[in-house]
Length: 433
Image (cartoon, rainbow, N blue to C red; front, side):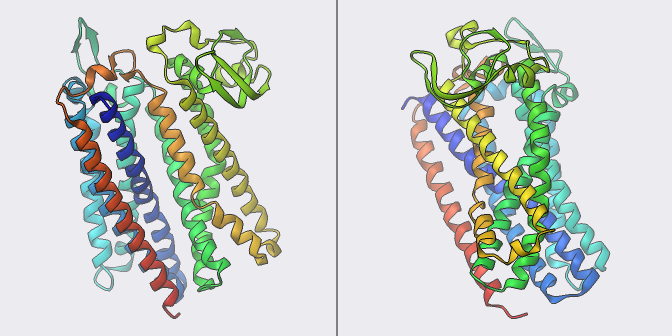
């Protein structure tokens, strides 16, 4: 493995892990706050117990998110010094603001964890709300920096120099809103269905059913609403990509030839050498309409771009199909939940709870696939149409050892978090109302 491949693998590996911790840290505080509010309103012990259990989960994921996020910060300078040399002054603002949001989140979490019976009830609840809002703000600010890599703005690129820098314009780049919206909804979908699935499994096993039913209801409402909204944000993102990154759009759909009234491919096996897609389902003219709002619009194929400017097609196409397929499954599952509120007998069936338990990992699989689409689909550029990834990598040899070190670090983190969360569930099930 050469330095470029090792650096790419390390960045991909750490992002795949960190995004899970970060999304859970963004979303779980809202579950905690809703449960806390229900405790204040009803004074039912089940909500107090649930709130205190979830607050421990929030603390665990806050710490692991901080550790994995700090490691990523080091990686930007360690692996991609040429990128940071030029991009640092341009996208430094959202990273600085993210640091401020993280600081606010840490303070608010400290107040919340240690404020029981010490702070006024409403102020205590407010600190929990601040934890959730600052977490979402952190996520949006980081995504803004990433969206700038897809839609660079706020500077003039003249003779290899980055001049006339405008940090605010870079922050509010053309892709930031659609990408931030899509990512925020994805975080709520993935985390909500994962948490709901864990509690559904406990209900299926008939463990502390009353508590887990209340937990399930809180989590699944967030997930179902977000899953129903996600296709709308996906449509906005697709239209944005069609305008700004036509090569990525062509790779998403594995379209090699430019054509008007381009069909939408569902599934299919990509043969990059022969530039064909077999075993696919075609929906006539659907891609043109979804991309440009016109059934006869022209969609550029990959063959219209130089070979050195094309993204890897197979992995981008497969990841996109997985993301859309699993997202569609979760959307219908959210709809299923709302229907089950009318058909209450469904919730008396063990199959109902087993179904939602099986959905626990699905949201995160879709999330990871979507992140692969975003990052791999931008290749070979680290800054779209400005700087290639190979030109940003460190010249320092031996990056493969750094990659191995990070694999060990994140494996330890994952084992620790899994053990801690498993212990929390056991404690919750063994406690008495």
